Amino acid sequence: MGRKRSARYRPETTLAPIAFDSELETTARQLFELACCGSRELWHSMSPGVLLEDPSLREKFYELANAGMFEAQQIIIGKITSAEPPSLHAEVLYRAICDSIAWQFLGDQLCHARQLYKDHRQPTLAESNFPSVIRVVDELRNSSPNSMPLICDLTSFVQVGDIFLSDPGKAFNLIEVKEGRENRRIAQLVQFYKASECERFMQVLNDTEPKHVVKQFERNLRQMSRLDHFAAIMNKGDSVDPDTGNRHIIPEPFIEVATWHQQLNATIEKAKVKGWAIDTIDDCLFVGCYVEKHFLHGGHIIFNTWLDKYGGDQSSPRARLVDSMHIPLALPLFNRGLPPEAIFDLMFGRMHVCMGISIPKLIEQCTKDGISSRVATGKEQGKLLKRGGGQVRYQGKPVFVRLGEREIVLMEGLFMRALFHGQKPVSVIRSHLENPVSVAE
Image (tube, rainbow, N blue to C red; front, side):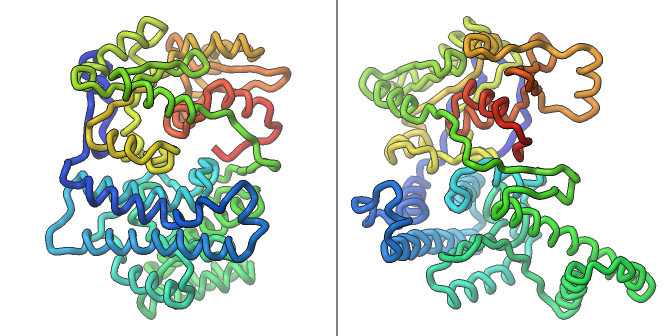
């Protein structure tokens, strides 16, 4: 269930079913109920906008939701700090649960989540300052009983700060935990430098402090700059990334993108009745669901053959829905709006969902929607290669799409949104082309 290098496409093995260890199902159900359904008793009285209109209901909602999330995290802490280390499948489950909490904080918004992910391996518990973080978590919870201090190292993608704090009535906060007199002193130096903006301070620091202190100061400064960047993105929607120097803008008002959540649930329901079901989204995103025993073992082969018939090839993006449990920035199954039983059927091998995108069909549907496309010229391809990978490729070349005067190159983030966030591919492309500012991607 861990992250693996992409393998060469083979119809008989690509998308073959995988499942969590069956003995984890009781724990998975318990953690899901706590982390995602803590406010269940209020659901019958909630309707769109009601939380904004009723302060007492809103307070009770956050009290129950955060209490459930905190209990789930406490259970996970107990399991991973026990004498017997958790299995690989258990670690994936625990991270997915904590990811689901983080995504609830973020309102499932990928543009915000990207600011927290730095594409590096999460530290093991032995590498992290775990006991100190747990102490601070307990202090935060005791001082504000309705808060939810999420430990970042327990997630797969929150890689800024040590604690992601949700405290009702206050802005979300990322906290760095510093232990030891020297670390606290360096943190105070960083705070003074950021508050004073005195450039001479750096020269004084280099002249008066040992090299290891200067290096630690610079590390702390980068960490604080990342915290400030995320706070600005969340609160103002506009900030410059301190790591890349790129300006990120989250446009206002919120841009709605069409989703295929209902179609996925309908496909699952059909499969339960006849053992299998298929559907296409925007006539380019192919979905197959397999429940009956024979199809569970061979459905992926049928699916690959079907996708290949309509333009799929070696480079076509393909994924299992359950892959979302171990891919950073993918919405875990817990956050996809699926019926609970479907979640656990997918996790424990009683159901299998395959997904894939045909690039030729995607281009065809863009054309029908008034969006023109072209492959990159040799010169453009060279420039894009210098910028790094990540472009969608058709006939071996990057693809540009245009609407009116605006043209953009298709990036693989499209596949993340389409496959693992349930957004319709053509709608995603149109939203980017119609948006006059650069979105944080």
